[in-house]
Length: 59
Image (cartoon, rainbow, N blue to C red; front, side):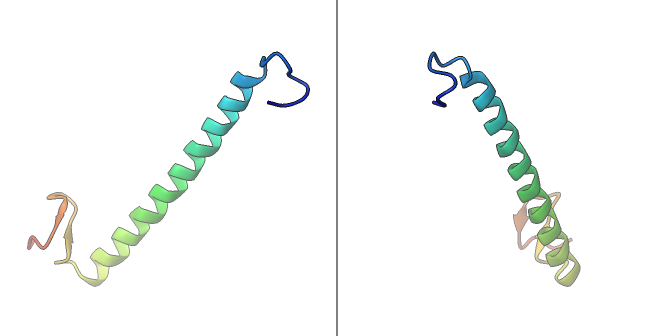
């Protein structure tokens, strides 16, 4: 706990900030994954069918 909150009253604020940071990181990771999937699909359209959600299925 932070020294200015000896009774733990800042806990909710800390948790909210941590949740915002986690959500931001997750969104960034999802964007990176989507870009990677798009690049793979562009290079190898047979490799990944996003509608089927598994590898190897021809379109």
